[in-house]
Length: 185
Image (cartoon, rainbow, N blue to C red):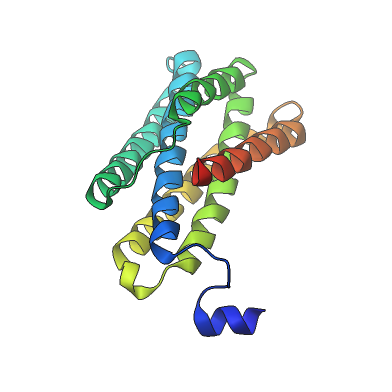
């Protein structure tokens, strides 16, 4: 199977390349939109705390990521996911809910989301050829910034959150489901 994929670059039954690229841009825009909403929720609870500056800095990065994917969507005529209203509510609820559990839980949420996104962006980058240099470069740049968010959240005490493994597993599962849905709907 790997020989076929490496020789052709794709497997039988894979969507056409154009649809794959549209799906990537759609899901990445949705993910950055969700991340913006998570930070909005966390900032609503922790914005005036000592963690406010770090959360604002991470939120600004996500705003920049979202703006870039919004531009790509317009330039390439990619429709957004119809689930965007759900991500608006769910993202804020996840951010505020994790922050209400405490600063460590908010950071645990960030670590879990960023670990899933790091993997997601890595896989996307590996699928892109040289003809998609701008998209690949953007994904690689944003992946590095998401890794930096994860590291910052770890340094801020994420693993000290009560029930860290439970929070991490739940957030990762939700993030993977959101990716799966946004790629398709």
